[in-house]
Image (tube, rainbow, N blue to C red; front, top):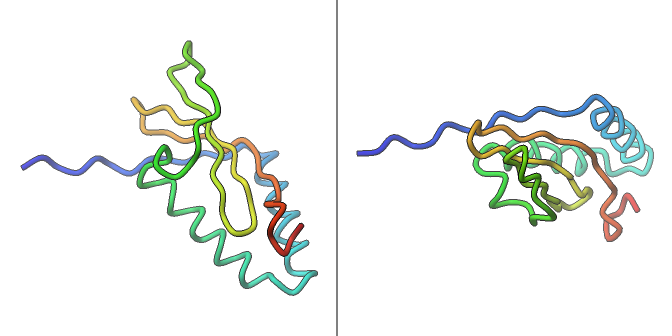
Length: 103
């Protein structure tokens, strides 16, 4: 019996982390902090099982062996690149989902 693949490791750029903190403050100010935190919990677990299944592919970095994706959640769009060989996802940026209560 084949063993399951190990989970993906996730690394986030400092600039993306700062932006995420700003969105969290904005959500708290608008009274949707709890919902935003729940959305973040899903964002932290969803990519570990297979980022490529969660996001829409935008383009390939062929020389690096990576694909760049955009994942959507209730409040955010998450932009990340995945290296399938090393099972590593790099979160590069976030944007507010224009249809969310944060927009």
